[in-house]
Length: 119
Length: 506
Image (cartoon, rainbow over all chains, first blue to last red; front, side, top):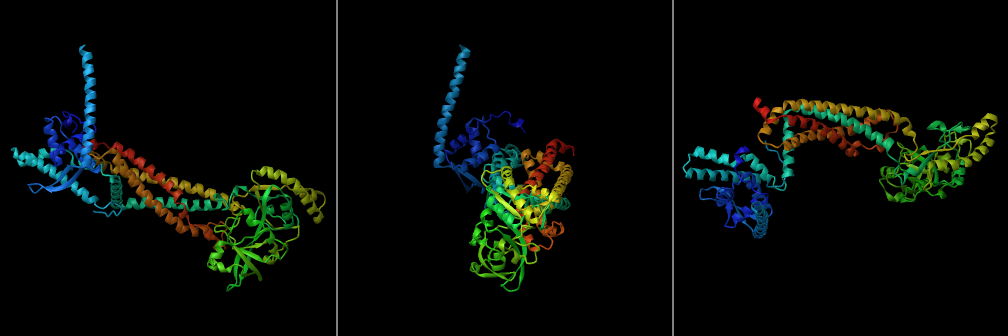
């Protein structure tokens, strides 16, 4: 079972939350759709494991950053659709700025190392 | 089979079903997408399921994010444990009965031991109390319930000691007598206690109603016609009626005025004895008309004496300062007895010793201590054997369940979860066995009282002092959890050894 996941990039702890919130910014979506959206928008690099996605969705719902409603799809399938709440929007803004800081910091470190290596 | 769990939050089952449906929808959408892309329905479904992964595991980890999941898990463990117990009733009955016997015997014997040997008198600072004893030959008439009469003093000697000794904050005397009470319907016998005027003061026992005795209630022989009731007797005979205050009660034909009721829970200074009526010691000849002893004769030794040491005074210090006071009292007694030669020397050389009185007068303890300690060790061994037996039983069962455990490991249940499940099962058996044990103990404790030969015969009413062992769940819980944990640990080791690979071998 482990081998199957070897080619996948593991998401950093907490990053999945950010991606889910970001995906929901474009409108309400069900779990399957969220997974697909993350996969396609990352150019198939990120594959979201259902064992991480559903716990994350339920955790975010408990924190009231997202809310869920039952809707019936065009195929008469009852689906659970998640949408961003006001506090979720605020959380997304916070996490985005934190992510920018983090990536800038990591980029700074990598660039410094690169210069040293080249110099 | 569904099992009702009233303590689970409403809607937990609904939430489970919702999660099922959410996951089903996920897979259906995945299948549809694949079919639209041209896959055959069967291949699409297989691929969708493969992509989704282990449905049970996803559900489990999702459920972990729900706040009350731990409660549900416990409920699930208990439910499953009960199902396992129902499935093997023979094992369950044997295990529970074994535990019930082991724990029941321990509870019953421990409750006796606690009542008789461990509990101190229910008075403030019982460790300050001492019992006076003066071993050696007595002359004249000696009454004795213990210690060959070494703890019996004459009333004049008690009064001398009380006046002269400075080491006590109070020195009391008391003696139990059986009396007849009339005036409220038929004549009834009751347990009387002759007490000195400072008895309640020294023991620091306040009244529940009216007043208790003071030193002014101890005046002249036959002159103090007052009585104090014990709370127990007041409740039982008078229905806790406060209007009995200052009314007369006829005891041994003498009308006594009821001046008060002692504090609830106070049962005198002798374990196993529960006085009903307290009467001043000066009424001795009226309360015990057939006694060969008299109140004022210094040759009649019949009165037990207890003291409360002053704050900071040790027994050794007190004993040292008492001896010089005691000798002149003995010498004047010897003169009255007209003792000569060796007798005189022996008599005046008697020491005055103090023994600890925090457990009251050690009458019952004297007879019961050894047999009780033997019994306690015996039933402790029985419990040990019980645990060993059960551990063996559970090990054998664990062997039989290896396959089941291997299957569950293979299906992806966590090792910690399995261990907790097995522990829950052990604890369930422990709890049920413990409950049965306590029931057994409370059911047989009164019979055991009669059968144990602990000198309670013909003292039926006093047995009510011996409360049922239901009061000791705390101590027993420890036992139970200790044995439960033991057995759980044994099975835990077995479980960890059962690897998923073994399942394939079967």
